[in-house]
Amino acid sequence: MGRDRRPDTGWLLAFSRELRHVDGYDQLVELVGEELKTRFGLTNAWLYVFEQEEDEHAVLVAVAGPKADQIRKELPVAPIAGDWLIAALRRDEGPIIIPDARAVEGNPDVAQRLDNRTVVNMPIGVVDRALGILGGGTFGDEGPVFIDAEAVPYLVHLANMASVAVARLVLRAREAARLKLQARLAQRQRLEALGLLAGGVAHDFNNLLLVIRASLGFIGEGPLIDAQRGDLAAAQDAERSATALIKKLLMLGRHDAPAFEQADINQVVGDFLRVLERVIPATIQMDFLPGAGLPRLTIDPRQLEQVLMNLVLNGRDAMPNGGRLSLETQQVVVNGEYRRAHPWANAGRYVLLTIADSGCGMPPAVVERVFEPFFTTKPMGEGTGLGLAISWGIVHRHGGMIHCYSEVGVGTSFKIYLPAGEQAAIDVGTKIAGPVPRGTERVLAADDQENVLAVMVRVLSNAGYRVTGVSNGADAVAAAEKEAFDLYILDAVMPVMGGREACERIRSARPAARFLFVSGYGGEAMVPSFLEASRYDMISKPFDPDALLRAVRATLDASSKPGSLG
Image (cartoon, rainbow, N blue to C red; front, side, top):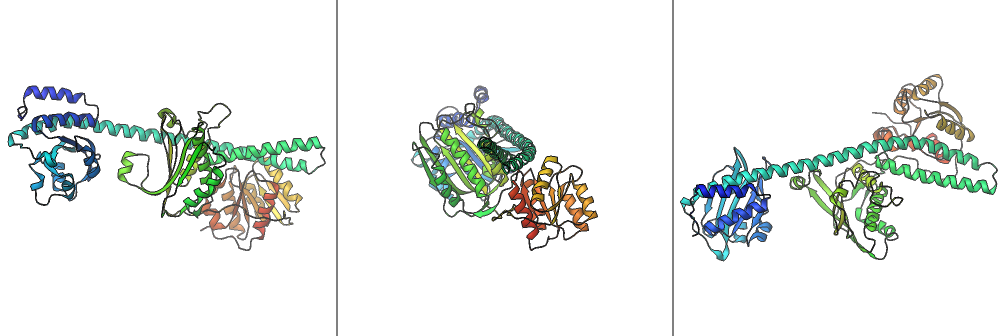
């Protein structure tokens, strides 16, 4: 049948030239498939590749012929364990020819479902490295074909030439994956660097805002004419807006500690949909497909709602003429197979939240930068470029992953992977309500910002406390050595000596001392385990006078004594 099955110099040169121009696995299999069909009447061809040298399975990367779809469905991965044929080909024992699989005793179930007839499999590799399996065959009513011993040299030459092309494609695929992973790591490093910068800027601004807020409050206590009260209200409104912006920067820098709790993600998303419906026009259909039997997650529901709002608004803006927005939850396992295709992923069990729109989509160049702070495609004045960057920071702070996929004219989907494992809960901050309390106790306040210290001293003194102010932790320790105070208010980050070190030194001399920490960096300025083990509280800048007084009174009135630092 067909041409002579014995290799000749002319054929080798011609086929080699064709293989040099192969640009992908599909093209390679099409080319090999034509050869096998012409010489033997084998109607289908396939290529399985060992993606990593230590892999215990081969992955189907290309298939051609009328049985292609069924092969993809039935045998996308060929395991080595328990399959003598795959194991033998991995050891470079071949080609292996099965004249008619129907006649083989103990024919595997998958071969029975595919109804294999003649099967030819050839090992491919370079030097001592197995690369994969190249094969062809017939199925069902096509019947078996005769392949004699004289064809073996031809099959060996065919596999050897194909091995060179496969090696080139494997190396190219690995290099592409390496470059993609490298780019993602570089993006993450840029985001983290910008987050650190944002956290530092936010710290300085929080100190300024604290002084501004308190000073505006002091002004409001005096007699004012109507015009002045209007100006005061405008200034206070601007201060609140600035505080909200700084909170976003803290989220970006992951300095705003999440208030973790056990929560049902379906309930969190479902409840928040009522809020989202107010910002979604009637031209957009919004669907929620909750997964069944999902584990409860340790998350900060408020921060997750922030992510939902950012991504939903992003999808809304991508559909100015209407469309469909869908939210879906499901449980997934990220394993070795998935990680090979997605190098950015971390292995484990996750609850996957997908937010997809049918909007205009984004080109690859935009997708690569979509999580960068201050990057936006919106017109000037219509976006800060912080929404997606903040979402990235929140998800990563939860130990999760977020990935964006988009096609121009098709739409965009964001996939959020939240760990299904346990996480330690953190609960910091003062949660007291009622009238603003006063007191007469002795309080030491330490802050390196002169204006901030002056505000705290004034607020506490006006409330009846006897206050001593110092500018750093070392001065706080020196003051504590001279006399005892009922409460020590320490800024978490100060020059000369920070709040935690000052606390430890004061505690060594005065074990019953009580402490309250303040910080412009948010919750991450102090190790949460230190706060929890010591039963100390923290209040984040900028705080208003009432919040400071409530925190001070709550700390002084606490019935439990400070615990051991461990």
